[in-house]
Image (cartoon, rainbow, N blue to C red):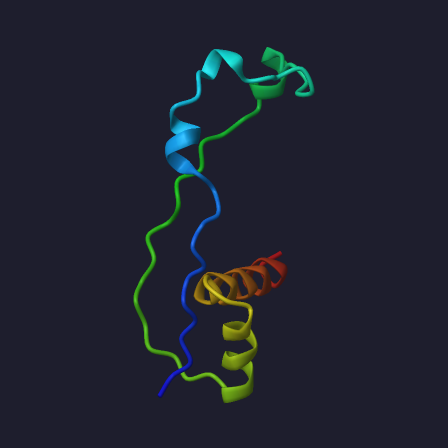
Length: 88
């Protein structure tokens, strides 16, 4: 049987939070961002991902799985970093 962890129930009272007036949010500790902040911004849409079957060493896969949810995304990030570092 595979080890599956139950998701922790959020301790946030979402109904109470949703009922709060947005005009009462204190933004005083957040610096204002001028137009210069956004002038070089570029929209990056996620690339399409292909579903593949890959064989990984048992210990390698378990290492990523122990990090919790999102382990496949982390494996992809490691592979992307490798590709980018060897593409120049």
